[in-house]
Image (cartoon, rainbow over all chains, first blue to last red; front, top):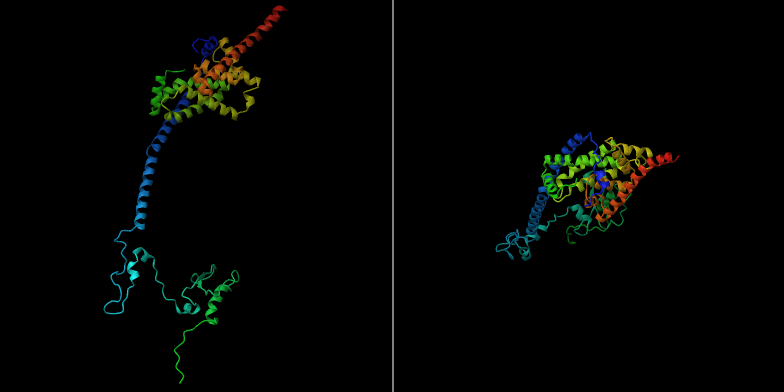
Amino acid sequence: MTTPDPLLERLRQLPRPDDIASARTLARAEAAFAAARNVARPRVGWSVPAALALWGALYVVGAARELTRLYPTSAEAKPAVAANHRGPSVGGDQFMLNAISNVSARTMATMTIVPPLPDTLRATSLSSVVPLCPDVSSDMDPSMQVVACDTRTAERATFGGDRGTFAARTAAQPARAPHRQRARAPTQPAS
Amino acid sequence: MAAAPSADAALVDRLRRGDRAAFRDLHGRFAPATFGFLLRLAGRRDVAEDLHQEVWLAIARHAARLDADTDLAAWIFTIARNRFLSSRRRADPAALAGDPAALDRRAAEPATTDDPACRDLERALASLPEVHREMLLLVGVEGLDAAQAAAVLSIRPDAARQRLARARAALAAALGETEGAIAIPMERKASS
């Protein structure tokens, strides 16, 4: 490119064509330049670090709360019951098992108290565990959608039959169960 | 057209700061060149005007995010060339290539002078293949050096020099053919 080329010099002397839309092009481009400047700059500046900082803070708080829950302090580990009673009390028949006093508060929180079974359910079951069989009929009374059934009748149950069949059969069990053992009143010795 | 690097760097720095006066300076410095480049590539004034607007909108959208060492001429002519190639893919190719009427119109459109030498040169330039024409427009008309032209065309600088040599030979041949086509009847007339 150091030596001047006459042909290229002739090309360089060609006149530039006029652009009659130059002013309009400049106005539109200048507006686009200002808009791009206003939109692009602040978004990238702080949004990403702020989002990362917020995420980090939430992560730390959540981790601390979880660690506190998993490893409670000694004060929180004390059981909610009186732990000093070991063995029979002095004056009466109150007992506290030693095991209870050694159970941590976390274990105590998971213990549930099972209420005594009503008489009707106790009569249909041989054990203290009564399975619940949900019936999903949509047109039943909501209070009837969960019925108790006997485990011995579950094998004979036919699902997919008429609606209410299973519930009716289960409800009829107390009346016709042959193996039920009723509590007998103390009999009088034959005189 | 190729400006000093320090002048480019100062203008780029002002553009990166969002200086609207710097954008007007950029437009004043490069807009006539980009319009002439597009007009001589496309051969139609209406197409060139639309392309020119697209080019400067694209420049405006990206001017604030330039690297500090950007070569402005190479960057702007790259945008212009890419826009032209995209529009040519969308357009009917018969309107710009292979049609003698389109060739005549393309040669006549950029002519802004009554100088017959310039008109012959425009016509010869318009008759060249596009690969030669764009190289001559960048280096010959707009004054870019071989490295800048190579950057615009996405080729190596030595390949750009070879392409420039072939394009220059093709232009010389086109000018010779034009002069020969005029001279041949005169010779036949003299001989007859």
